[in-house]
Length: 148
Image 1: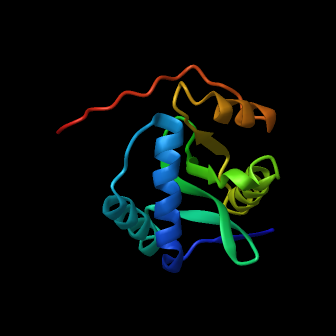
Image 2: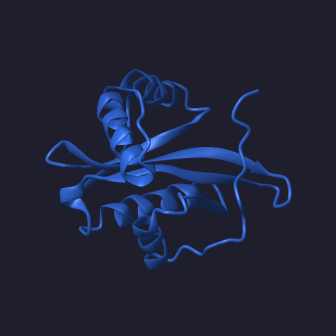
């Protein structure tokens, strides 16, 4: 299994996996054009973040996205792990663990001290995976303004 930073050439597969992720985790339908534009936007603008992909025989089998947040309380950069997806046939084969190991290594190299992620409250499968690999549940709720 090869872990690498995604390029714009990976945008279509990332968009497809994001559509599957949205449906599997939240039963949400995501428009392909929007998903593709969103994937391309981060892949061409590193200020937004980056994707890592896991490959087997040059086929993307898993992914995750990193976005950045500055913590004034900690005076440090935090990385948010988002858009975590592993193709069904590759689940329980260590794909997320390999992606996470690479992210931890990259974070240490860049002196990032905090990694965070969120998951839908009903996505219990993801929660089990995250707890299994050492993530700690924190007492935060996320709020969102739908329209500005």
